Image (cartoon, rainbow, N blue to C red):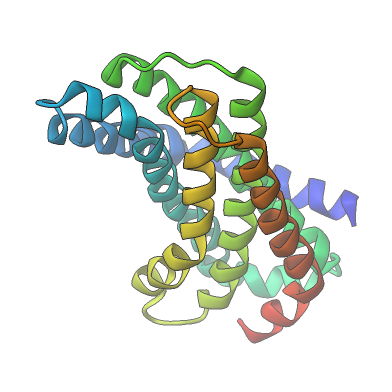
Amino acid sequence: MWRDAALVAGKDLRIEGRAKVAVNQVAPYALVVLLLFGFAFDQDKPLLVQAAPGLYWMAVLFSGLLAVQRSFSLESADAAMDALRLSRLEPAGVFLGKVAAVAAQLLLLEVLLALGVVVLFQSRLSGAALLAASAAVSTAGVAAAGVVYGALCTGLRARETLLPLLLAPVLAPVVLAATEAWRSALGLSRGDGWHWLALLGCFAAVYLAGGAVGFGALMEET
């Protein structure tokens, strides 16, 4: 299973490395979203600093939707999903490979967006352990849920608009918990950010386990 996951992740990342969609399209889009948020709160700097974690994770959510759509658009072309089904790869390996590829792209975008938050919102990043841990776990949850719903929508005509409609409500708890964890790490909240991290871990574990078990059925339906 792990070998299959490495093969699928390597395939997706090589394709992305050649196409550079994340670099040329998704990253500029995410930065523009942050810039627009900054303009919206420009007259109230204290409010902007308080809202920075939430605005950051909203930008990550939008970027994640684009990354998932891109991941499954690769499988929709030239009957690539049929080739995956006939390749005798373990469905769980295919799922974990696509999750790893999406997560790798999101982590790079998150680093870029964190720099954008520092520059545009004048936020001071502190609590490095909690920030890094919540970012990693949140990214795993976003990628896992995105791959599950991306596979579910692959064979549908309106998949480009249906995927955000289905996925955004599912990821709302991730955005909330990650925002609260970051607020605690940055000293903007008195809450215990590690409790929010535990909630993020539960969400990620559920989607990773559920996706690994049920991805074979999803592949047969697409």
